[in-house]
Length: 513
Image: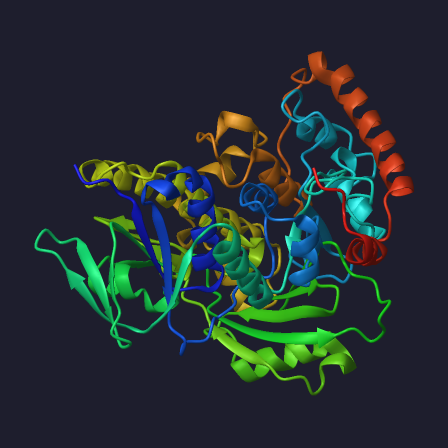
């Protein structure tokens, strides 16, 4: 049996370097015994740099890689992210908005507060009734204090970051600290073995690259998984209509302008605009359906949103091909990042899918080729499930709209544009609130039941209540809501302004754990 110990990653960017770092960090003790991670990337192909929003999972990922949170925040122009606010998604009115925060509802797991809130809303949004985070974001506060150690939180958080700077930061760390071998070379041929595996790579620079497992991080080109292995691409554009993005980098008018600690997603006539705050700029873009609006009209909507700040700024256009591979791991080749697929960035799923795939590869790395196909089948089952659940969750934002002002919104509520699973769940939720394992049957769900609650009730959906069903939990739920109010008051008093926190971290650094 030949051990699997030479890992070759083709392609850099966030996908390549994050995967290299996760695998190398997990298998550091094997390096003296011949284990290698090699990343080969073309010096002639620019990095697309997709993704400025992340999930809280990135904190654990960076920590396991041995990265300092202070260094990451400083070098990646990063800020804290506490969730997303969706504006004008339900009715399109100016005051139409709700939060999908990153904190779970108070006492989640002990009591389902959703039906209790439905029975007595008390003039509060669902988010405000069950968690502090919407109020924290409204106040422009950060999720921790300078006394909170690196990667620890007062309020749960992820990050906003500059994707280009993040890739360079990861590259330096992987090469300097984790022993990843970096080759700048253009792959000209993928050499195949008689059994259908990838045997090696030839490059224009004359470097021949051998390996036991090849990770395809070549972006939309999918050089290995699509080109060499011929794994089909499964389009999901019938459910998710948006296929184009226009992106602009917007400077702050004043150096002391507030930095939002949440993503803002504002619905438009045929799509939506993201607005992400970094310490030095805002990242703003319009994701839209080219079947429902022209690029020129979409750009006008984007510049109208920006007002005078965006009048002359250059716009970058990106095509979105919603979908993913039929299989992600084929023989001794596994796809990560854009080579695996891409979905519109409504819930910042691009980087977390890289994380989850890299973590699964690192943890389930086959000992030898003989067991690789078994590992691949398990990987494909888990990863296919995750992509499907993300598609459903993104579609839920559109399926719940009450907007009828354009064809885009009217088309999105047609049931034939939803998966069977989503249709069934939406019918179930008319009579039963989303809750733990009622509908979510995997240990590592990409979105917990709480996320579905935030979107459902944020967008005006309601679940019928059966008389008497809440009686035994009324006291527990009432106590949880009182605890949430007290916690909210404490946090608003104790947490610093987001920009102030970022500036203090840049000057003084956080306490390491």
